[in-house]
Structure formats: structure tokens, C-alpha cells
Length: 142
Image (cartoon, rainbow, N blue to C red):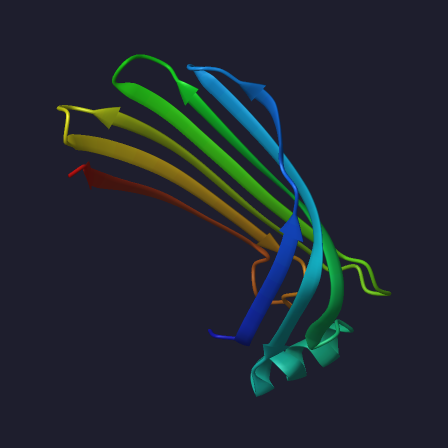
């Protein structure tokens, strides 16, 4: 069931390395921006019934972090988190978490396993506000 016509989020900030070494890096980036979304006609009806605004528009603030760990010479872990919330009267919140293990089998070929989690409290019932996926892939370096 598709309830969202479009969503755009633009946010800018200045990042700071909390940790930076050959084996580990951690970056933290706070920022400010603008978000806008619009639901489909069915989404607007469900939102009205649930008492939720059918669209989001206005100033937002957020936080982004990125962690890279080199566990062994051939195995790495990467994690990033994006978390946004509205600065206006609404209580809009959205989060996205990505975590990935990458194992290089040869200098140009690797296998990865990735976990992705998304949360959006602007979605009306019966839509689940939390979505997750477990994916795997192949990486080729040229």
C-alpha cells in the first residue's frame, strides 16, 4: 500500500571526527535543514482518521553519524545513522540506520551483509512506522 507521494529532506551541517585512526573513525554531523512530504489521497484519509497531519513541511534539525572499523585486514564494519526531527509545532521524527560487514575475499572481490532500519512517525495506521531489511551483496573493486 503506497501512502506517500513524495518526500524531500535537505539538511546541511559541519562534521567533526570524534575518533580518527587507521583502524577506526567516528564522525558526528549535526545540522539544520528543510523537509517536505505529501501523502496520496488514501494516505490523507487515513491520516485524518488518525488525527495525524497529512503532510510535513518546515524547518528540521538532525544528526548524522558514521562509524568505520577495520576489524581485520580483510573484514570491515560500517555503520551510519540519520536522525531528523521537526522544529515546528509537529512532532515529526524520522530515523535511518545502516550497518554493514564487508569481507574482501580477494583484492577486487568482496561479500557484504547489511542491516537497514527505518522509522517514520508521520505514517498513519495501518502503516507500520518501522521498516527493516537484511541484505547481502557482492562488491567489486576496479
